Length: 40
Image (tube, rainbow, N blue to C red; front, top):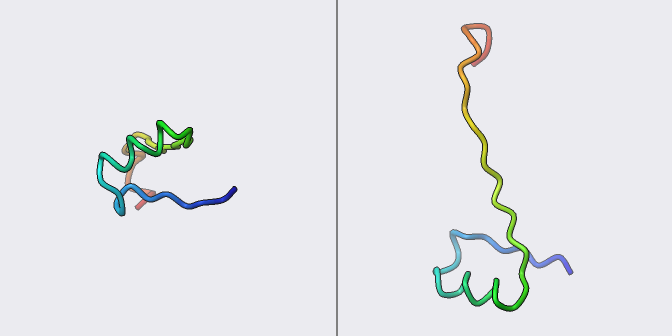
């Protein structure tokens, strides 16, 4: 099963229903760090 699920296309109610039906949601998050002038 490879059904794409995009948060920006869904309401909170639709997301909640998908989770109740067993959908696995991966929400990538990360920090932004300053590494100095050598990086953009």
